[in-house]
Length: 234
Length: 123
Image 1 (cartoon, chains in turn yellow, green):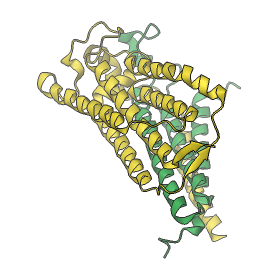
Image 2 (image 1 turned 135 degrees about the vertical axis):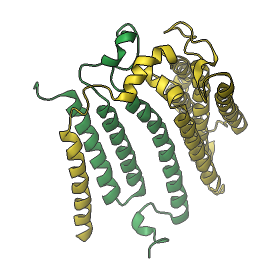
Image 3 (image 1 turned 45 degrees about the vertical axis):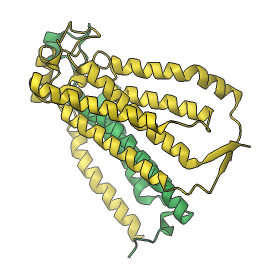
Image 4 (image 1 turned 180 degrees about the vertical axis):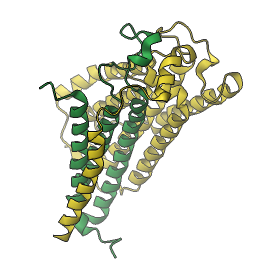
């Protein structure tokens, strides 16, 4: 009983906090100062058609680096925790249906291609490295559902992950010396606004972020698959 | 119907998700359901953040044919909350995977996912 009252009080306090925000709608009618600066000067400074990408990769590039590190950390801890699983308990699975097998064979390469498309076009259309990486990991989930015995090479995943992470930071540091500062994208010519090879180093950086995120999420997925310890079909 | 506006619907949906999530975290007994609650809480905050950045009668912050680059500051919604949410979604995914692997370890150790059976840290 006391517990229920406490829960109710917590929810009510939260409701009061949210009510202030909710009654304050519309929150804003013009862009805040920072966003206005981004919207006005971004085409000349960064040259990416997608403002969100310009904020994520260039203006707040350091946050993105921290965020990729958090994702790496959580992937590493998942690998550590699931590595403790006892390997004595074995599981058997029913054989995968023909439908899923065939669909996975056709769809997996297409989904990987869509992921690559999404992160290569990250500076022009909605999308980018994080979304593209997640799509690539989704292709791996489909492949694993079709063939649960498939072995994923951890060496390859960690090679892709560490190489792309290294290149991301390396480009960032190179830009301290050759351009305006850490992760300033004007190391390469900005190019024609809206073209695929534009916005300086953004397509390169975002592609490597995409590979890194894809590799990290893939390592989470493959660790979870190995923790199941599926050895054979029934 | 003209009174119901997009920003109200999105923010109300986000707040509702936060409440469902928090209620689930506080009341549910199964760890898996608590993780679902965390996930809903997470999604709710994302929806609220995006709806804070929304400005009426404006379009997505992508400078293409629809938005003139010189007039962009008066035509697009706020890109900063969207950039924040973009990173928050991926972090949320990583944290959910982390919680699920903890739950798997607990299940292996205690043969149960009920929090009332977990008394290791109870004083």
